[in-house]
Length: 238
Length: 364
Image (cartoon, rainbow over all chains, first blue to last red; front, side, top):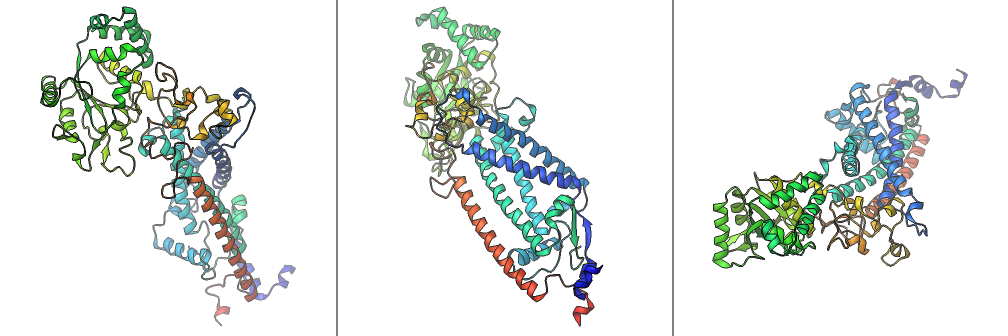
């Protein structure tokens, strides 16, 4: 306790009130990191599929197989991505309140208020912060809702296109989707645009995590490893 | 029918070769060939109405110029082509009479083959004998057994249906209710494919198995890409970069030249054209995807990624994506700078920690 004597009484008082809460359960953290790995691999291999590098090779085709291997990796990680996503959907019903599906749909007035609050405080920086969210803040979770929709669309177009080159029953479950968007070309286009959505999302996401940890010091960055966050318990919603 | 073929100077050997060829194209088992032979020998002619709407007649041209000489003969003889603007001898009122006679006499039996799209924005864009294409189609569909839509025009609008689609060119399957429609895609379809579809319907008296877009699976279940002889170069990552580079001379994959093979379902790589002589990719030209909907609008033929709508011809999703990525990075940088300024201020003013809302000390 000697350490605390260096703090002002006011800060000491606040220190006392900081407590730890268990926010992200193991399935959520597992999902998060597997998903991150999948998206990184899928974006890199996917970009190569859409825009293969120019190789001026003097060799014949039989001596190389890297492009097929690249595509193979893309498909393997696509499967991983899909089933990992299923796990997360399951956990939206089985997990704790911070993982619950209701988090991702702003249907209450409180959630909408929080969205505007986050916009004012964190994005536009019009005022200093006035609250803390225990789990996701309402704007973040609403964004994730759209990301989940993008995941679904990416799986539908991806496995739908894959169905034509696979004899497995699984991709055939997605084959119906391709005629709906007007054929493989349209599906490929959608798939490609969504890749950029993921890239831009990842940039913003990583930045905002760093930002929140930097300003709010709730340990949000490490919370996805440990599962725990620090909260002061002041003016937080709920 | 068989007698007619012989009378035309073909031998029984020619006849059987034709039947075998069609059976093979359709992917039938060996006994299926026998059924085709039998059907060709014994079945009565099927009355056929062949309507031409907004099109260039390249489907008809492809059909009658089939490399296999017997294809056109056998089909045109086997089916009783009662009405087709391109080939019939009758004209004017006589032709109209034929049309209506077939519709009445063979109600529920005749096959309706349609070449070309139907304008729906103003039906007057395409009129024959004083009636609009739309009305003619509806009248003919009412009594037909099944509809075959020839080519990209009839199946998905083709060039007339390309943006901005001034005539409101509409595919046949969207206007036909309650009758089976076989979509024989391509611009034009391969002659042997057209013949194969007709022979199948003649032999088995039913429509062939269709894919999700209504195309016969026998011919449209595989991508051009999957049957392309340049495919090993694709898997090896060896691509033509420009039409005149060393890679082009080596016959590498045309993927980066905008080849639509990976997204196009057709038999070009197997059946090929002109008696199996060649097909576009074999001639060093990328596939343009002519058997897919909207292939004119899926932007420049020689570009792998379609152009992004609204940003000019050459702009692809990658360009837009990179630009958005750069803007995002700039936004993040600006935000990070603002955050640091604010954090310094907060530290200076000692308000970094949130003030307890109900703290009595604070209120004093």
